[in-house]
Length: 205
Image (cartoon, rainbow, N blue to C red):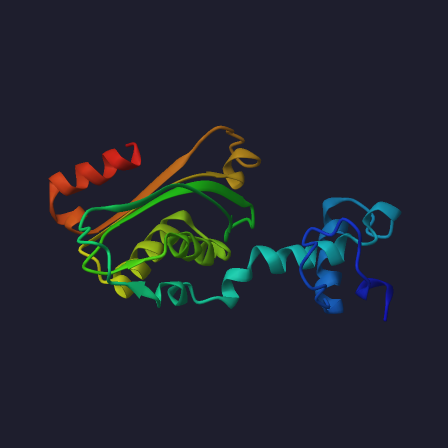
């Protein structure tokens, strides 16, 4: 076992299996460190390529998941409940596909059941499954809504996402504190103005 295959204290993905990292992946990180102007062979950076590679495997674990899988088990016995089901302020993190910079935000996800509901944690898992990929916020919003619409077959779906993009706040225009909001309405929330107003009010908009 090489030094780089051993567990490292303080690894960004502590608690997960210490997956092996190919040499070319580590060398790519070393090249980036040199390009940034530092020395990848100095003591403080010796293990950084391994940590970064493993961290990125964690950041992008959504590629190994099928978010729709979380919607496979539904419940029909809801005691006659036929109103909106809403989860608010679901935190998530992603990375933009243009600069690989963090996207940090929260989502509000609602659906109007059509005789079937799903465990509430599954809705959050759908969000995280798509967020843990290289993303743009518009596509993330659409993917979450489309997945719920297709696999739960509800009467309506509403997704609103607010997020801060480090590609804008920490570089380029360097404008911190800016939040981007995207939404997708489907079914009754798109077609019926009163239903749309109701769900947006419940979301706090």
